Length: 266
Ligand code: NAP
Image (tube, rainbow, N blue to C red; front, side, top):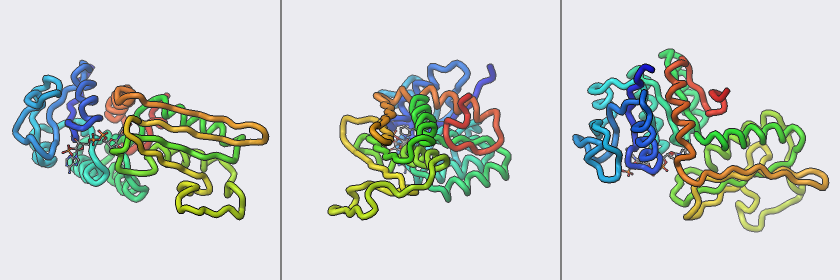
């Protein structure tokens, strides 16, 4: 199998560390560099707790791309940094695989245009867990039969964006098939602002943030005399890695930007 040369951004992060293990354990993946805001000039193997990969660390992404010429950028950082990195990768002809969440519809439009102009593959996936993607698909199926739905997403308390990318994506997928409806009593009033959650085309989205949690979501449907609950739990970050691997392999074979892992799962 042909080697895929990868640069990772955010190697010391929780997702980054797990992705380094994936790269280390995948025969046809080679880590050629890393982008970190500290540790420039060191190797990944110099950093305690990271796998013994002899890849150089750069503090500047452009210097990194000029020096090591990877096939793929794997970005696991923050929305502001991830959006900048993705743009620069496409400019340099490098295929981005982005797990960073919090991109806006405007970001996606802009990046889609850039990928098209460059005829380059790019994958942005707010959730790399295969089970979470199935939860979204099953929710979309159920929404054809149940108009009333509320989404509760639960994450660790270090998460920066709310609602989660998965929560928004689920609401979007449900809205595609669900008959438009404003839920709850027409005269309902919030005595404390936010009590009924965020409103996405009439679908209510609630964000829970607690230490101890990783990434979880419940989609609750209500109908006459029945409810249906679809739930997915990620108990650790290893749950995301089969999706990351699939995305890295797939991005080499496409020439456009794909948003969402569900669009590359067969
Ligand atoms: P994390 O542990 O906070 O790691 C974030 C990494 O980004 C850290 O290494 C951090 O370095 C780096 N970073 C922050 N600001 C930076 C800057 N200005 N320049 C360069 N690097 C910078 O977060 P995480 O849990 O790994 O999550 C990372 C991203 O993936 C988040 O957007 C999260 O929502 C997303 N996520 C996606 C999935 C998925 O399936 N798609 C699953 C889980 C999480 P410092 O230590 O220096 O701050």
